[in-house]
Image (cartoon, rainbow, N blue to C red; front, side, top):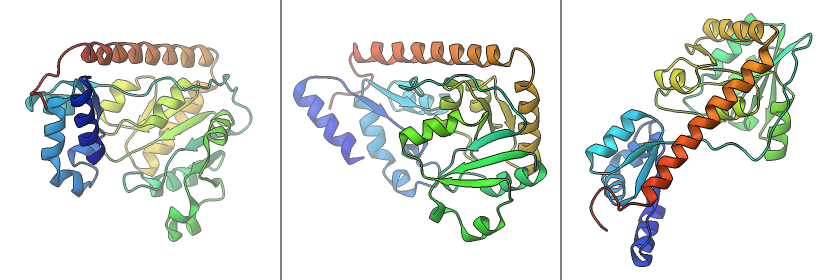
Length: 262
C-alpha cells in the first residue's frame, strides 16, 4: 500500500498517470488480512489510477464500482524461448510451487503415487515443504529446490509439461503462462478463470485422482502427431490476448483517471 501512495503522490506532482497492479491479495483474498483491513487505501488508489490491472473480471467490476477503471491483464511474453520437447520413454512434469497455502501439494503427491511411470519435479525451497510431506514424497517425486531464472528456464526445458495449481479461484498463475509461452503442456486447476485463459490446458479438481487423470490425458495428447502444432497455436492465442491487454493499458494511460483527482 505504501509504494502505491508514494507513486500516486509522485505522479500528481509530475502530472503523469500511473497504473496500479493489484493481485488477489490486494482485495483481501488469499487470507491477506492486512489488505482486507486496508481495502479503503486500495479503493483510494484505484479511483486515482489511470487503470487497475487485475486477474479476473470480478475484480475489474469491483474497481469499476469504486469509480476506477479495471483492466484484466496478465503475463507478458518472457525474454526467453524454448523448443518443443518430444515425449520419450518417461513423461516428466514440473510442479511449480513455493509451498504456499493455496497450492495442493499433498494432492500432487497422491497423483504421483498413482502414476509411478511419470517423473514429478517440484520447485520451491525445501525447508518450506512441511516435514511430513518431505518424508512421504513418492520415489518419483524430486524436490529441485528454489531455482534462479536461468535454472528455472532450463528446468522447464527439461520437462514435457507444467503443473500450475491453486485452490484460490481468482488466481491466474504466472507459471501457467510460462508453460504456454514455453511450448509445454499444462495441467491447471479447474476454475472458471483458468478455463477461460488456458483453454488448451487439461483442467483438474485439486484432488490426487483428478490431477493424475489430467496428467494422463495430457501425456496422451502430447504423444500424438501434431502435438507441437497445437502447442504453437496455444502460444499464438496467448500472445494475441496479451497484445490486446497491453493496448487497453496504453489506452488508459493516454486518458485521465476514471475517478477523482489526487
